[in-house]
Length: 187
Figure (cartoon, helix red, strand yellow):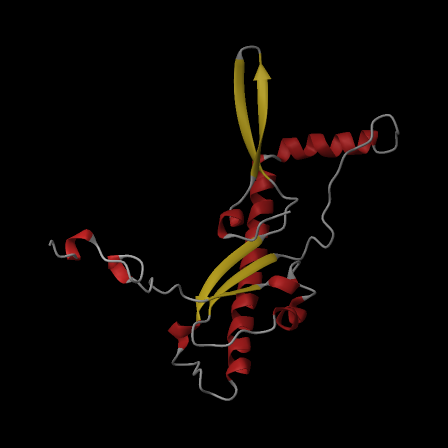
């Protein structure tokens, strides 16, 4: 399982060590059997010129803005996936040939099963949009994601709504009702 946080959106690689006598060499090959994952953060308050929280149709306008952002993210993820495949072909072309040969040679025998992990619907991407919605209402995540069922693997939880953290009510002086030693009178 993948945690849908920005740190997981980096390209993953595997290392293949080539050992000959006392010499070692490590070849890196990008993993291609992973879903592309893109993440972004949107602060709705920064779009007040287009989004007025007092508008009667604000939910529709917010939905359109978020749909546009998600569509751009999908295109970005698919471009990243194509770049990943190109890099994998260049970096590990001989490794891929060896794996393909082993699969061809042992695929029919029960003594040497080929272990493979393939993705169901590999064309689908993972996306996560963190939406800071202070002053705005939230959207239904499942209803929003239903528009992307054929394109996104996690269509039921694309959006992650959060509010801007407010400063502590006590301010810099500490918790409410407490007085610092400097503020007390000496008797």
